[in-house]
Length: 99
View: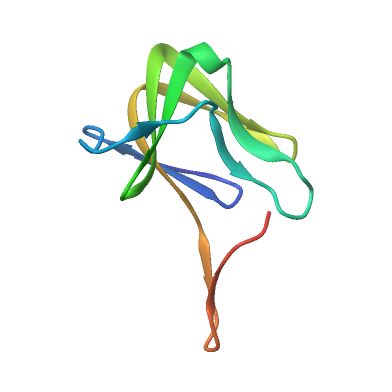
């Protein structure tokens, strides 16, 4: 299953990559324009990892809530998720969408 939270994409996956580094926070993405961030409420409900393939989230509680000041919250069930930013295409360049 895939979720879209503004410019952040979240996809349920079977497992985490073997090479990973635990992050000290659960901020999925910072907003460049507003300064708001996409984050998991309740740091103890999930762990964020940086991997060679990008960011991955492990929801360890029964559920975790992804929040942002400008979007409705998303509830993620226990499991593993791949996190990435949506990209914008133009003939001149490919760039990350700004939220």
